Image 1 (cartoon, rainbow, N blue to C red):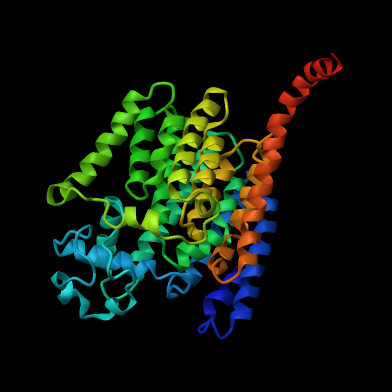
Image 2: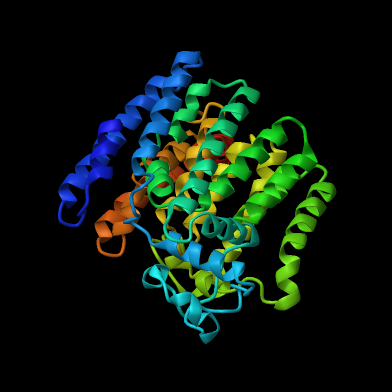
Length: 415
């Protein structure tokens, strides 16, 4: 893993040495998969120490390396800088004359989506502002904050595994995930803080702290909006207190922006309806029908929880449905599975085992998403495992009902 990460981190001209970059990533992936398998059932201190040491080392190799696969980190700093200057990022676009003075330094040349305001929730904007405050001349501030969040996820994940009486070695699926390493340590995506809040929500939920888990889930929503869809299935028994807690927390966070402009979602509605990248089912169903389908999935998740399905397994399935129905699926969106899959009991067994395995393979090969527009073959390979796994799980779920109906059908046919 260190060798694969080191080769990739030391490459200076990746387009020119693309074959070396691909080989390095493949080495990292193979090593990670073998390591995850070896550590999966381990719970001894030496195994945990090895897992943590390697995780920290490979992340350090990418800390000073400029992003290559995505330029989002520069937009983070821009939105944070705009907020620090007392300007509402949900209103003012990078190209507007009101921020002309901010365009006179190094950051401007890296900014994309210049004609669009921000789409990030308030906690993300605060994180961006803090990063720019820490380092307004480079990426060290945002990268440091992202890595703090990354290691926080790992620490909370280990605590959650202990709470669920599962081996801590399972955390290697997150700690050694090549996608997690590349997207957070290298690309600096703020998604990691949503995962940290989501991990805290799972831990507190398992400990019986309803309000605490609701506050953590609200924090996740304030970094990334989709965790709001998890509320019905998490709190289906006594929903009023946790729902009120999440709503009040999110409302208070948005209040300063609402006072200046009721449209606090910025560019998000347009981004969610007009732009498509690496999507699957959304391309066939189109956005309105895809949204309706996802609402049905939310309802089904509540039914699954009432039927006794583990709540983390329900979260995995619902988030997978969300991504499959989304118009844009960037590879780093899948890092949530590296967090949640280790927490699922008997994850690859039972009726949903094939689905979980398909999601795991999707996570492992998700960097193919960057090639989706250029290569239909890469797009097909990326999504094929998760659809095959889903079809196999559907067959396993329906087979008992068909077998129960068989005697009745045979007697009717005979009659």
